[in-house]
Length: 178
Ligand SMILES: [Zn+2]
Image 1 (cartoon, rainbow, N blue to C red):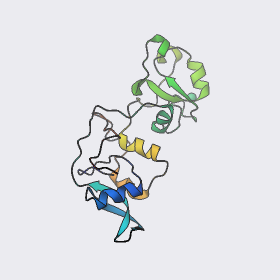
Image 2 (tube, helix red, strand yellow; image 1 turned 90 degrees about the horizontal axis):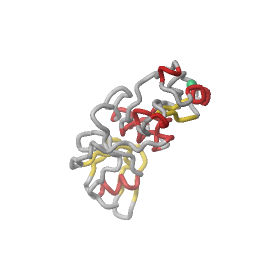
Image 3 (cartoon, helix red, strand yellow; image 1 turned 90 degrees about the vertical axis):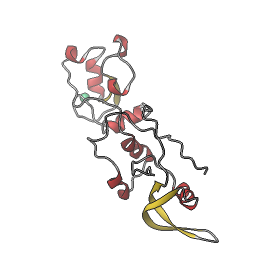
């Protein structure tokens, strides 16, 4: 579901998308070829919809931090050596004042996690492959949706864009009852 500005907002079920279209809260941008039928009407099943009215999204709200989310952001790669990640590591150890936040948590392989112990990067001789940041909501929704539709791709930002200046909330309340 896109905002009126074409900004991606969240993933909704096809049924909910159809309800929003029927209530004229949203319009169909891309269809997937299937149809929803009722006694009175037939609606093409949408794969992308756009809200008719712009929804203001609270920009201070962040994507919730979880192990799964960190793995998705970091592509399941250890941010120290690039191998498959199995752990989540605090860059500045919690025991030394590090916070449990997007900019201090990275995916890590078991070996690096064990080798680093409760040390700072320079003490352990470690370097990060990229600076950890809160992920863009649009990329996060792909990770949580489980499935991705190729038709969504052109509406999503590239991996390097849109990570600055706050992350739109995925739980933006759309003014439409189900
Ligand atoms: Zn590693």
